[in-house]
Structure formats: structure tokens, C-alpha cells
Length: 171
View 1: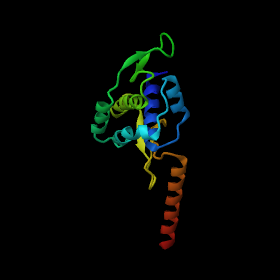
View 2: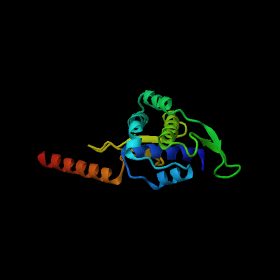
View 3: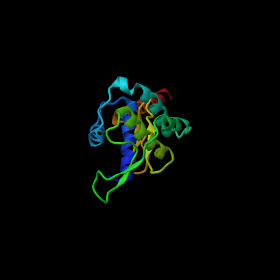
View 4: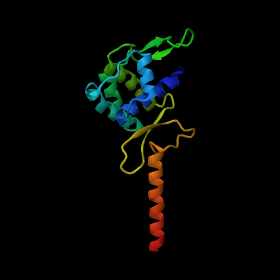
């Protein structure tokens, strides 16, 4: 695993959690590799609000305070891992087999700290579609993504087209 991919994937995991998405293959794989049990909604309760605020701060290039608060509540326990094989070491932000919420908090807090600092170039955005409060990780080549999904992009495009047609008929 490349370190940049690790941070990007943890950022995707944070976004998935705050969006309330069903567990993805990425999430299942992370939990399996790191010997973490899938937490239930009640267990996640204390993590989701500060995590959402931190993701929003990264997406909006806002205050660093929410990310720092998450780091204070869930301080990373940085260590070097060789689980990908000898000579392929990389940093981990939490210990394998740790309690799920603590592991998620530590791992996501560290990844979001890297993202808000621009190191590495992991871009988090907030969907620009009216009425959508979802976030996304922008891995497009030129970092120009504006929507969380094709559905939101299409809905916005159709709404803009209809508004232009309506304006043209009024003139």
C-alpha cells in the first residue's frame, strides 16, 4: 500500500461514515486487514458529530479547530507497519485490533489532519447540488469534481437547463 493511498482511503472512510453510507468494500477490507469489528450505530454516536465537523472543515477549507479537536479526542498512535511485506513499511495511525471507535477516530483524525494540511493532495469536497449535504473525495485528475454522485450532477444539469429554457420563453 502506498502511504498516499492509505491517507486517501482513510479519508474516503471518514466521508463514508459521515455520509451515513452502507459499509463499502473499502471499509470491510480496512476492518478485516486491521482486525476491527464493524461498530454499530450506537457505538459510532460519539464519533460522528466531531468527525462530520472535521470533514466539513477540510471540505470547506475552514478552521482547523474541528480537526484539532478530533485529534485531541482520538490521538493517533503512529507506528510503522510491515503488513504489506518486508521492505514495504508504512505508517499506521492506530493499532490493529483496537476498539473500533477508537481505531476509526485515530485513523480518520490523522488522515484528515494530513488532508487539511494539503499533504498529500487529498481533496475533500461538499456536494454543490441543491439540498444535498453529502461530502466526497475528489480524485479527479484536475480536482474539478463538484458533486457527490452522477445523480446529483444530472439533477443539477437538468434543473439548470429547465431554468434557462424558462428564462428564454419569458423574454
